[in-house]
Length: 139
Image (cartoon, rainbow, N blue to C red; front, side, top):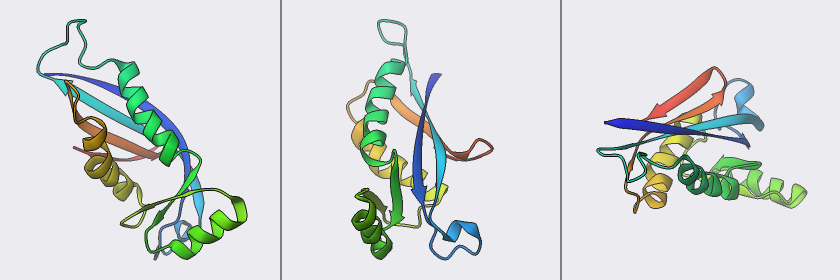
């Protein structure tokens, strides 16, 4: 088995409801998503997946939904409505607290299966870096 990975950076804000330190407040990160594809055989060009295809599919979704956006828990609508009203900025809601772990799980379970359903390769894992030194991995 051979793997290839593409890294995609984006900026987003979030707030972790119930957190006991600074993360309880709205704040932002320079996230980095590493998406890894695998295939049993290389394609006719000798690739698992074209890096451009990985980038185009995933980055298009990220730019539309996450990049320069606020990611909030679905129960945090009061803050989300305030942000939208005051700044005009859109808010992306997930079904759980927007920790790095839950954001990665949302991507893995809800987004990636839809985006890559018809691909000749499969997505093996993702790593979501919340900071350059801290990441979560889902596989």
